[in-house]
Amino acid sequence: MGIGKKKEYLEMGQGTVLSQSAKAFLLADEHSNDISHIIITIPKGDDSLARLALLKDSRVSELLKKVSFSFIEGGSSRQESVYNALKYIQTLINDFPKEEQEQAIVLIHDAARPFVSEKIITDTIICTQKYGAAVPSIPAVDTQKIISEDGTIQTHLQRSAIGAVQTPQGFLFLPLLECHKKASLLKKEFTDDTEIWDAYPDITERRKVHIVAGDIQNKKITYAKDIGLTINSKTDKHMTHIGIGTDLHKLVEGRKLFLGGVSIPSEKGELGHSDGDVLLHAITDALLGASGLGDIGSYFPPEDSKWKDADSAVLLQTVWNDIKGAGWHLINLDCVIEIERPKFLPWRQKVIDSIADILQVSNTQIFVKAKTNEKLDAVGNGDAVKAYCVCLLER
Image 1 (cartoon, one colour):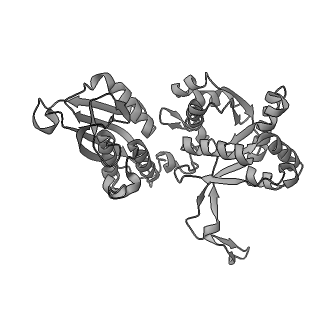
Image 2 (tube, one colour):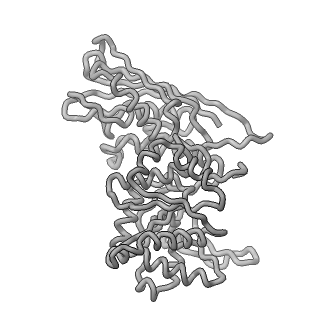
Image 3 (cartoon, helix red, strand yellow):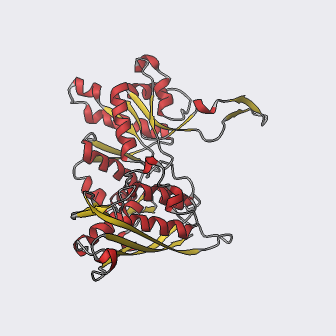
């Protein structure tokens, strides 16, 4: 990263990389109640820094009232840190009935993967409960080769049989703990916990690690551009771009009205191929225009059936992740909604907060206002809703 500090403590969204990662699991738990404890391994002496980073997002502080969490000292390697956490978990469940201990599962996640989705978390939990071990994976894009020490290709691998695994990795707790105990006695560094699991088939009762669908957005932050951070140097060229986006949708009965990812009670809702959220569509086009990466139609063609009734928040997140990957970060968004009814003002702050959460930025960077059309044209007659957005990006 070249920044001289732990990337997990860097600011991101309304908190930090660490708080975003934790929040993903806490939000997933709101729907499933599967998670009883969150353990974060940290370097020795980092208690205060880690606590500040975790609790910087007020939403995380609120969610942690329902789930226990602990900081424990990690080790000199990922493997040692995980083993320390597993030993700590053992102290938490020692008094549990034997059956509960045997059913307990653990998810191991890289704190530097803040883009993990609720679906990946939930799918991993379900698959682990069913098979004993699970990991998200995405297909390899590039053709993979094994390279010899002399710099030549040794083995040609079949790309269709290769997957890039992500986290969280899920396991039955007791067998994984025993595998780690055995692994800790060896002078060998395992690449991840699935390798440790597969190294001891007698302990795991030969249970295979099953694959669930990963996501290219669930990337591990490695470079400054992964979170839109610009590192100052003599070679950096500072750029600021403005983008504008607009969208118009017909209002009809029998459809929900979505504005900025918020469902607002109304007699009519947007008619559209996706959920019709005009505000998120306008924001998406503005961001794409400022970054020069295209437009919403090229990203999500309306003739493609897979985008029918799509969640516009997911579409915006997909675009925004690409934009951040290109090194851009948001200065601000200014939006206008043209709608005759219902009144927007009571919903404004909720919409602003929703957009900020989707983009993982501060709500102070977002503003939304609404206008009526004084009963003129389709908007004024209550038959349509229109949105405009202007954004400022920097890299």
